[in-house]
Image 1 (cartoon, rainbow, N blue to C red):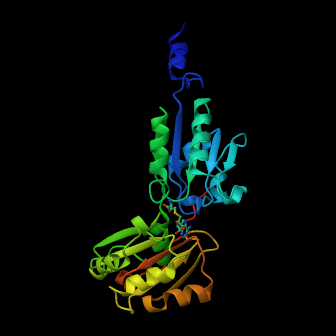
Image 2: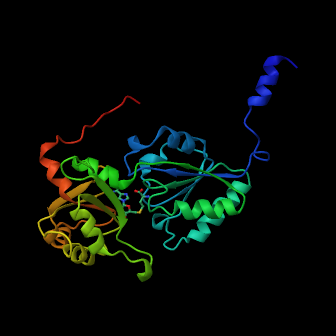
Image 3: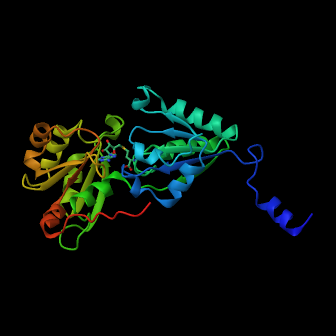
Amino acid sequence: MSDLHQTRHFTAAPSPATRPARVTLVGAGPGDPELLTLKAVRAIRAATVLLVDDLVSDGVLRYARKSARIVHVGKRGGCASTSQDFIEKLAAAEALKGERVVRLKGGDPFVFGRGGEEAQHLRAQGIEVEVVNGITAGLAAATSLGVPLTHREHAHGVMFVTGHARGDDVALHWPTLAAAAAQGITLVIYMGIATIESLQRGLLQGLSPQTPVAVVQHASLPQQREVRCTLRELTATVQREGIASPAIIVVGDVLRALQSLPPPMTVTLAA
Ligand code: SAH
């Protein structure tokens, strides 16, 4: 056997039978495919099976192989109630068959994406899990407004919180978060539209009604819409403008930096 032949032998991809079962949790970012990481694109291209969440845009799926099996596991796929359990079982079964499984999630898999639960359950079954970061919607929403989430004059920190807690036992205490925001922590609220009235009420217990607020729907996508108002007007503005999920609510003085920044730069790269 020649040296060249041997080298080829050792660098060839392992066959499905010898490759360890693995699932890659990939962050698909907020929607604009240009916000995908290079690692994410590479994983999507290599996948033979993709389990795809609702919030993943069609533009991202363009990078999948034509032969790949794409399973929409959100409402869009007609499976209103695709359970977490079902998704994890499917991912595990396909990985154990030797498929290259990518679990594609909106934003970052580890920010309100249940990526932690999925990784834990898969690893418990002896399946290797790799996680590829994505740009989380909160970052994209702020940038699309031209707002820095921290700013030396306005905010020295940022908190990502969900408006949709799992049960009363872990319900958020909005007045406490309001107190943090009053101390210069920007609040970035995910899944807050359904509970907007109660979160507004809670935040008003610790923040001035004049606190600036912005809501961004479909951040980074062509259909993006945003509204800016004060905390006092939050619910009324969202309802009047028909802003719906998926949307991010940004609360804090950092929004006062808005006027001083130019709009975000758009860079178009050659294909
Ligand atoms: N893992 C995701 C979050 C999933 S939770 C991430 O890191 O971004 C789902 C919530 O994310 C939605 O209810 C909404 O609050 C937010 N979201 C996701 N994509 C969004 C987008 N393009 N624009 C605005 N909000 C978005």
